[in-house]
Image 1 (tube, rainbow, N blue to C red):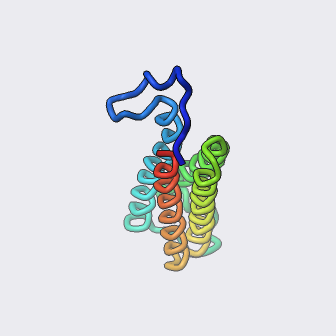
Image 2: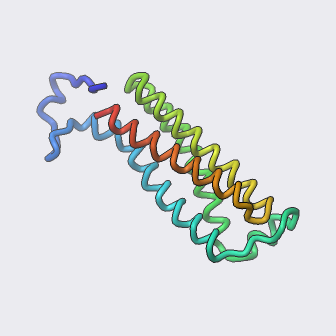
Image 3: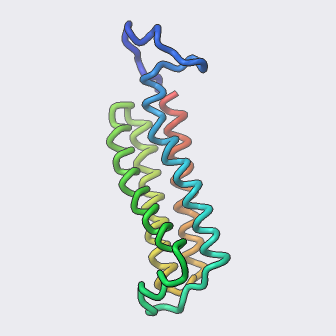
Length: 150
């Protein structure tokens, strides 16, 4: 869905030909895509290089394996809040962009639930898979939102 621009905005375009309002409309999903990429890399580092104790070991021991788990958890919370704000900002871009933002937020929440299960279940493969599915849904949602706003 194309964003309508006012007469005053027609003259203000960047080198790509997009108006400033279009750039603002895709800034949030693009920023969230970047944060998702960082989150993915942190998650892979944890999965490969950090030992998570078996279920019931407690948060203190999980956090005692270096800062990666804590940073990954905090970034997950930031992504959840950013996803909610992304839905709020997508509302003025029409229903296709809003649906895409809601789907992406759902993916972030699914990945977060997988992360909790991963920590509490001693690095279970099914929880890791759930995080991967949530990640892909979130990325797909934000890419689709950017395309819907264009």
